Length: 119
Image (cartoon, rainbow, N blue to C red; front, side, top):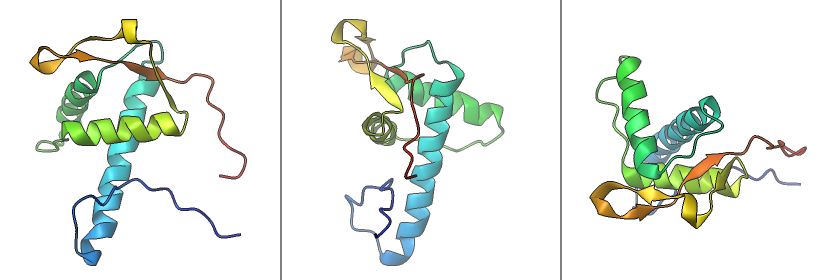
């Protein structure tokens, strides 16, 4: 049986083949870092904007100046983690106003997550 590789980087912009491994690694690191934020605060609910801010603050605290993350990358990671059952999308009424005055849904860490046996 062929092992299914996790798709972390979504190649929506045509990158040269030699740049893909670096882009995939960066996306995986971002996703892992975002998951860590949720794991560190399992009872909290976060909007993508709040995760982006937390990411920047943590990177500053780790002396990783200049490590930026796009909001689209945050949303990609949250979407992927939700599909993996690592995060739970909260009810509509648990959202709050985000950047630009728009209402945002929130997500929380799935404290009941069980790693699949075949991984």
